[in-house]
View (spheres, rainbow, N blue to C red):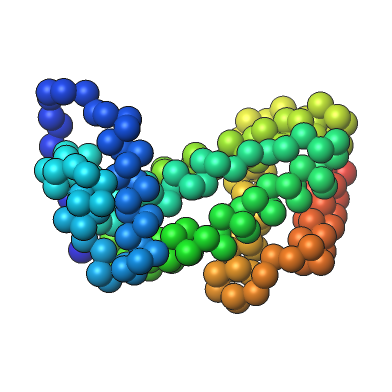
Amino acid sequence: MQSRTPASRTGRPRSAAADTAILAATRQALVELGWSKLTLSDVATRAGVAKTTLYRRWAGKNELVVDAVAELFDELEVPDLGSLAADIEGVVVQFAAILARPEARSGLMAVVAESTRDDALRERIRASIVDRQMRLVLQGRARAQRRGELPPEPDPEEAARTVGLIFDMVAGAVVHRTLVSGKPADEEWVHSFIRILLLGLVGAARTP
């Protein structure tokens, strides 16, 4: 099934307050009803808006849930804790805490499963979640380079590949640990993961 692309519309500008209410209502419905029973009608009722308001913003349930989950990940920040290891630990702990929330866990797993047969939905996940959170790697790497913990990468293409790999390693490991394996990203696991990650980063940086 392919995601529908809403036609371009003119008229009154979107209300940020309505968007916030709709996304919050979507997450609440995910927790209380689960993916299979969640409907746009129920979300509209919870948010106190007309169903047509949802359809002016989102093509359907898949896209709505992606945006509702993406908003949670926008809470992530790279703390400045004095070292690359401490900064990464701060992000990993935040990320694991978000994934432990029922609305994030059920929503992310559902849309990823649905995206295996919906290319447009997969692209929306990439744009709304993956690409937006790549900022965390860019910020953390730039700070580590200013501290002298990582060398600069003058080649833009190589730098972009490095950023993508770091994101994949961190996000993939935490998602697998918490959602696939169903195990906690506790202090011992986080420390072990960061130690191995830094060995790779520092080793790669020293390789001519």
